[in-house]
Image (cartoon, rainbow, N blue to C red; front, side, top):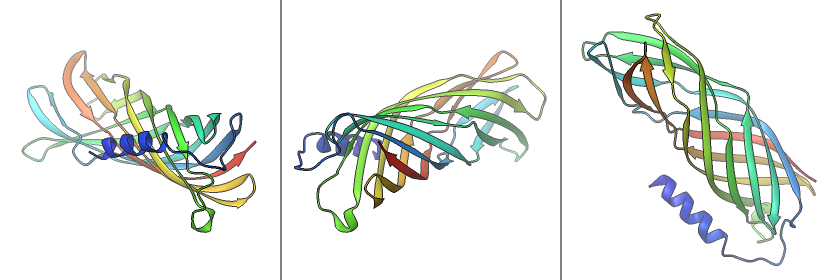
Length: 210
């Protein structure tokens, strides 16, 4: 439902017009940091005949994004980051635990609408977007010493945020993204189930337009 709300907001925004806008042909770059906050229930895997509930920790890393405006107020944005690091815990019904680690890169491409020129308080400039996320996992490790592999994930992504201008072409950004990230896991070549990370990603950034 959260993602559906973001999609609806983006579709509605794309049908609106304004007398003042970020003109087509504008570029912007945003540099900041984001916190990946995985959903609370990350699924169940079965290893060696034992079911384990999965819990994935969050992580924060520097990020950068570039956006090109293909029409007034409408931009295409690509988000990139240095690798996020996640610890995870597998817990069976008796409370026994296995631990592990992984890293991932989550580049995300979005189509966005910016509410620029709507005379909002403090000249705030909200925006919404929808797109696709591609997440690749690497350096997977598990405490048993087995060979853990997490498949790459492709899923929809939603984006919402606000730019707070402090100069004609500069702003402070606060934003949140939803990413549909699910990965199939194998241990020692055996399929053990799917891990559902599907996080909300919260961030701040400095934005510069060109």
